[in-house]
Image (cartoon, rainbow, N blue to C red; front, top):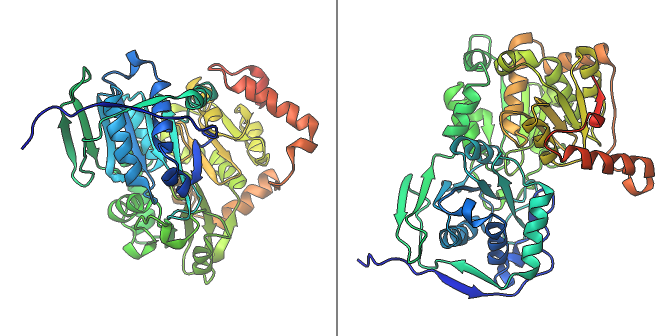
Length: 465
């Protein structure tokens, strides 16, 4: 067996003009990553080069993905390039799979300098589908614009990348793997971790698992139906809801992550989660939920397929927030919603005298408010809901939040919504208003974007309180 140090190479390359990360990183069709020479390598090098060498050397980086096609290939490249760029340790989900909320959790737990998430969120997978790369920073949330702009500028002028092509990692075996490199950055460690456990432990400290277990498997338990849509949440649902909280195994469907999501479009809405909606119609289930490909979005349904809009969902959680033990201990610092989201949350904030912030679309803006100690609960009309336990929206957290409300109030989903509408009125919203035709809204959106990007948001972002 050859125990000599692994060689590190510097490989010449040429830049591509189209690697500007969006709000959810760089997302392209799979064939672009496959067919364009060094396209993946260039972007990964740009990420590492955006981090000062003094911060990068010997640091910890988290890597995980939603299991879609090209996930393993990308992880192999990331491992080889991380080693060559001075990273000291990679923490990778078992089989390369880790939900977006879990990556945020692990970054924060291990005090990593950041994480690379391989996902195209709710977009289709497979060879003809989409692939994406997102960089989350030390707070566990999506990189701010100053970071993504730096990555983009590097990608436009990149001339070379560093890689250790002989380094091979076993993603199937839990535990540490050590490598000796032929450079000054050594040793290099890869740690394959249980993708579920750290995240599950976080949830145990937020929710009353005993009360949830009684709701889901006690004498008068409710029946639920959860659709993981062959995305990354499947193993989390099976471990937490079925094994720990006692739901029957057949309560959870499509729980095996697949590279093409079983041919489905993993977007939790009434169109793409139609099978779940249909299974709820006859009334045999009291509660239903669906998740997207990487686990950060959710859809909530009641008996007979009663649909809870994302805007109403976050408002109901806000109005019942002390059903969740975490908030009994921490208190509630503030609520926030994205600008396109309905004002249902505003009404709860006004009634409870809790500050409400209106932010541009993009979870990083919520993260800024959380880091500044201003925000506890937030949501977007695109089926994203979350709290300040991490810095990403969190589909499974939202489901457990709803179940906590059900466990406390012992009403149906429909009755809870109808009571909420009686108390606050009912809000409606639409997603298709073109911002460019609404000059006053565009101006307001731009102003808010500037204010909320700061670490201590301006009082000007306050809508009510």
